[in-house]
Image: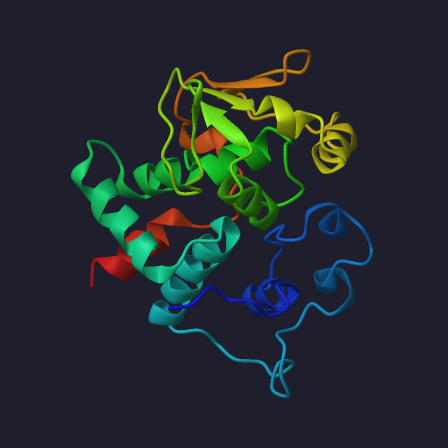
Length: 208
């Protein structure tokens, strides 16, 4: 399936909650949820009661859209999470959080996960000193992420770093602002993951 290229604000409206897909805009009055909190389309303002399956489907879609992951990849992560020890839903979110594009965004090196994905694709980052241009690359505890020297001099990267200088960094990551270096201290626990999703419903959806 091709990646969705339409208006991402429609995704937030469809899910009825902010998925923070457009960076700083999501924190302003311009956010579509603030102006039109109903679903898009001519029947968007109708009152529809979701079934149990509908709630599970929406939870899965919210998680996919929040992280910008396609269905096939997301299902693969679920199977991977189910084979690990521990709670499957927490394992699933932990895998999604450890993606390189998500970590780049969480460190404040991109304004959105979509932008982080594009920057990774263009080869602006190194993991443990080696160039990695795969957004879905899964990081491990102890991995170090840096911005390529030539990329740090670009106006785009400088602007992003400056605008996100005060953005808080998750506690499972470490950011050295002077050397512009990030490190994965440990993979996150559930209470360290801010994703606005109900992971137990995702597990129920795939367990049918």
